[in-house]
Image 1 (spheres, rainbow, N blue to C red):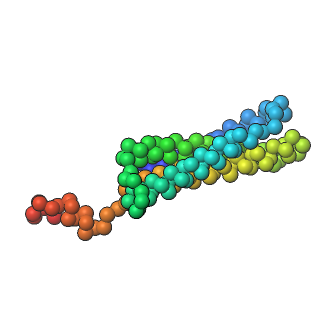
Image 2: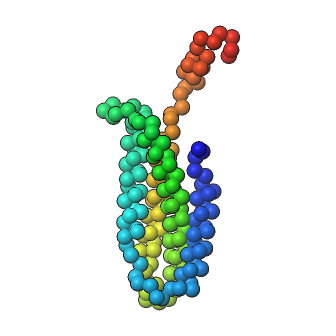
Image 3: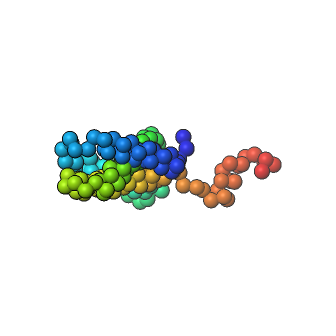
Length: 160
């Protein structure tokens, strides 16, 4: 499994923005005011994944006072990070399309929905950032060249 590609996240976000623009432009008006619960949920996920990134990095680096890291938990965190990055990109695209449409719509309802749409965009981008940080924190630190040569070839004379 390779690292998350930024291009994949951008394409997913742009596709979600296009779908949001098309749907909202044809269906807006019959909906209640935008809820704040998705914003709070996305922000809470971003905070939790940021904490997990810091804790995992410290445990992998074997900082004093930290328990050793469980390799299975790190694998689960990588899967969570990849899924959260993609979900955050889709939500960010959706909120970006929604926000863009609400900015050009002159109605009072659109004006009331703008704060929730902008907050959703910011929370989604925070989730993407936290997920990418968590994914990066799960990597094993590189060993210096001298240590790798000794570990790899020890006991195999003449095979350097």
